[in-house]
Image (cartoon, rainbow, N blue to C red; front, side, top):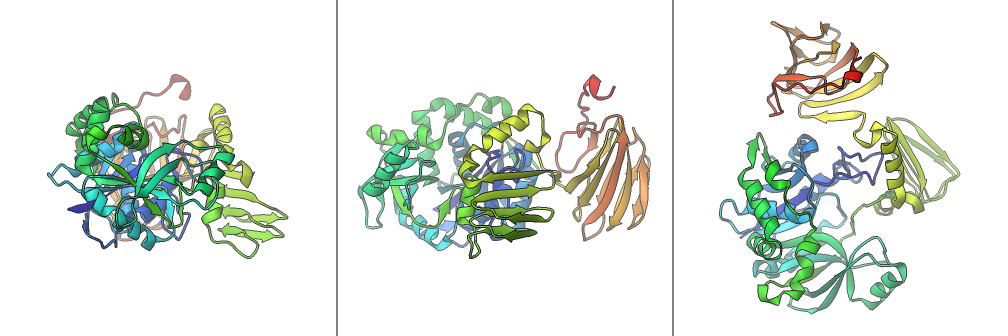
Amino acid sequence: MLLQPVILSGGSGTRLWPLSREKHPKQLLSLFNGETMLQATASRVKHFHGKVAVSEQLIVVCNEEYRFITAEQLRTVGFENCSLLLEPIGRNTAPAVTLAAMEAMRNGIDSVLLIMPADHNIADTEAFHRAIEQGLSQAIHGAMVTFGIVPDRPETGYGYIQVGDVIDQNGVLALHNFVEKPCLDLAKQYVDGGQHVWNSGIFMMRASIWLKAIAHFNSAMWTCCKNSISNAKIDCDFIRIATEDFSHCPSDSIDYAVMEKLATSPTLGITGCVVPLQAGWSDVGAWDAVWQVSDKDAAGNSLRGDVLVEDSRNCLLISDSRLVACLGLDDVIVVETPDAVLVTNKANTSNIKRIISRLKEDNYQQTDNHRKVFRPWGHYDSVDSGEHFQVKRIVVKPGGRLSMQMHQFRAEHWVVVSGTARVTRGEEQMTLMANESTFIPRGVKHRLENLGDTDLELIEVQSGSYLGEDDIVRFDDIYGREVGVQVEMLKDAVS
């Protein structure tokens, strides 16, 4: 029997805007201790030693949009061997777990799945390991285990689980009911009564048990997921779930689809139970939660980046690219990025969706992606732009190779800042070193490669009538991206 870590990393959110964007969600952010939340989630089970061994292969369910940075972040912390399941569209957590369970059973091994959202913070890893060990026997013997956070305050932003008596020698509790987010008075009653815990969204059960339950409670979901993964395509390091099959899949959460129904379906023969967890857990759902779990100075301020603060208390102040100076502030959040700045008081951080809605209505691009955009070969930063020009700083990692491509509406001038570049331009090839440059005319096939063992950095100046990222025809790509297709341009975009 193996313990199979499953990381749910498919959400795209902006609750931590402007650091999080729809194509760069919060699990990819480094907010605590240098690791991103995705990396911390993966590392959290790396050194678990219990009744069963931990599988060396992670199963990660993620969004296709940020598949490359997900894979790169996991490789950076030592997880080379991952099954990355790419959801073509979001269908909530129950289908994601169903896909993961089917992938885990692919070789006939009925592992114990440890299902973890990628965007949670757990301060005490050893306590988390003890909780896993506490619930393992129940999971091995066919129960569905959920981890309930012992509340330290009445919280209206979390769902609750009503628990019953202790059911084994390890202190596991009976699961009675799931409760929606309560009002403040009811939350106080829950905390005072001692029979309710917060719903963490972390679960543990055998793969076969989950599949038995989902087939019983939602056969349509089981069927769609079975067809989706049967018709999936292997693409480099990724498993592309079949879009047509998955598009018909019902959308539901783990709680609604299965866990809430266990108590009312005793004939199924599967029980639910709860392991109390006290490990410094937070779902980091808003900026005030980031402040709560961050290190603070004597005045209660949490500071990151180039920040100067005077006569301020209980603030979260983050600078991503330049000096931020704050004077005379109390209970304020300031988050600076190269293309956007958020200023709010802590009491309003849960209402950031209003700002996001306004930005989308007015067609701001800052909800979608950062100025720095990650690609499988490295990243680029849009430094400046005007009506007919754009300047980018491009960094290609060692061994990185851009696709062979062509642009219909723009020309490009490349200046190497550092590293060694091999440039293909039409029928010719050249090697460029620091302070050397070349010009790529409009309509000419070209490619850029890093020949060295350090990062290649260059400045790209684009000029032309249309500078959108969709002005590209790929002829060859080592990363499995679509080739031979020209995206249609809007007529008014190039007029």
